[in-house]
Amino acid sequence: MEFLDNFEDEFNIGYHPDLTTPHGIICECDDQGGITGFMASAARNIVTHCHELGWKFYIADVINSYNIDDDEQIDKIINNVIATDNINVSEKEVREYVAGLKLRNSEKKLDKPE
Image (cartoon, rainbow, N blue to C red; front, side, top):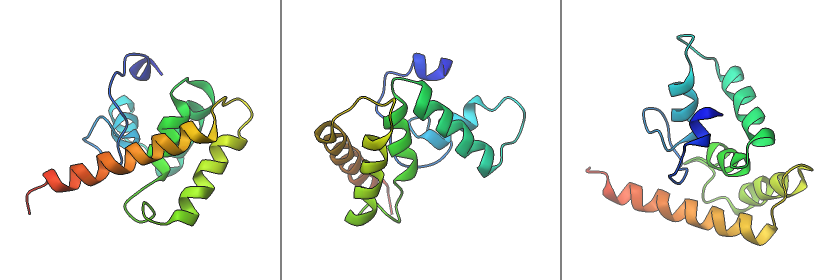
């Protein structure tokens, strides 16, 4: 949570060592020397429910290169965020955030050398 309190960037889709991704942040904050997928999911869920950036963190973690273009999956993810009681965010705001996340992901792909 302390890392997120000082986080001033936008979340992105991806993996460690990219510290703008939920995976990268969770791995960076792991001070025990190893974390399982279950533990990482538990950390994500705690952040989702307890931090003001939690819903964005959740979305950036559950959207990946396999489902980013699957509108049905994206709708399920958006509905999960909206249906969560302690997250006070509109559907419009979530959809705009997902659109920005997708755009950043496509730009990131373009920046990668082949």
